[in-house]
Amino acid sequence: MARILVTGASGFIGSALASALVDGGACVRGVSRMPLALPGVENVIVGDLSAKTNWRAALEGVDTVVHLAGPAHARFAEYELKAQISDATGALVAQAEAAGVSRFIYVSSIKAVAPRTYGNHALVEAGTPQPGDAYGRAKLAAEAAVRKHPTLRPIILRPPLVHGPSAKANFANLLRLADTPLPLPYADVRNRRSVLALSSFIAAIRALLAKPDGPAGVFHLADAPALSTGEIIGAVREGLGRKSNLFAAPWIATLGPDTLTESLAIDDSAFRSAYDLPPTNAVALLTQTARAWKARI
Image (cartoon, rainbow, N blue to C red; front, top):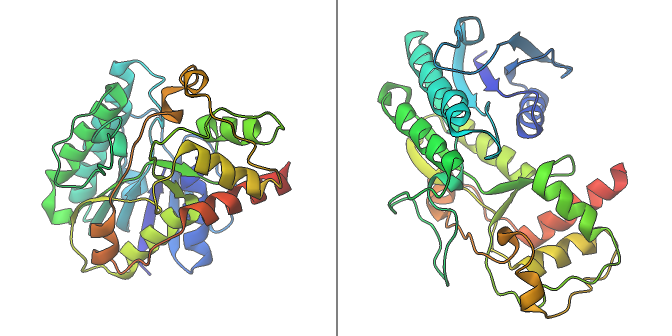
């Protein structure tokens, strides 16, 4: 049976993906910095990520790599992001080619393309990337490293924020805020933000694995449609069993994080067409995530 290597298998996305693939009958090896507790997942420990990382033990006998390891946010210094994202990815993809891996799937970020969109514009793969911070630049450099190895038929996925009941950081903060009776000033905010459910991400990876002769290249990935912040909060509060409780006060809304008022819309039609992936419902999936999160606490 072909073995799939999932790097970053101790993380929010990687652990869920590795477990889902095992449940589907796949042979999975998970790379992590600490021992994993994922039933059915073979574990290889790899140390710090850099250009010098030795992936040999992890790559032995592997057919497909799904590379998720690395910082998920721009909270690190630029040199750390370069080392752990672009340099480490370059080392992994070169060693994967030498080890005889057949396919390399790199999970990048829509931040490699742009920090925001304007009006009704949605980001497509053909656009010129213009990352807005060190994290986006490191992701774009990692993409370039992957694309230097066409024999691996590389797939580069650019998701937006991925949400699930065990999500951390920004989405976890949003869940906690939404799970209060506080009225929120986003009724009149007309931005458009794409999000992606963890279940949708896993479905996309399964679609890639089910079509080994599918096209290589760079693909965007998101649930549809892109939503305003008010619509996102409304969907989340519905899952939490609360009323939307929004009011219009644009000047107050601008005092919060920029992500709650700016747009970042994505067109992923190319991927769904290439890999026969049906459309998803962003509102319903946000509601499901909030409902599952509520059941956990």
